[in-house]
Length: 88
Image 1 (cartoon, rainbow, N blue to C red):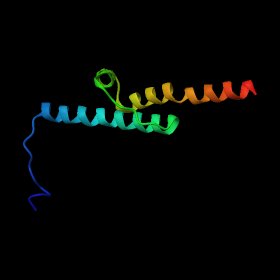
Image 2 (cartoon, rainbow, N blue to C red):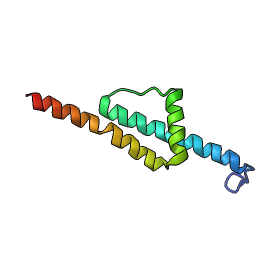
Image 3 (tube, rainbow, N blue to C red):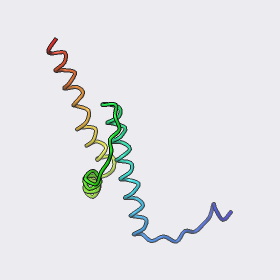
């Protein structure tokens, strides 16, 4: 019963830090999925990627950041395919 109705003492600041960490990792996962699906390789995230995603998450929701990733990633294969078939 203590696990179901447990009371956890945690501050709002700690909850916000946990939320930021979860949101950042969701963006990493979606970026990895998108790059892996389109280009068949894993993206290694460095400090610059973390800065960019943290900045985006200060201004936009996780869903909006997903849309930014989608909008910038998905046109590239279409451009490649168009150029490839145009040459034929």
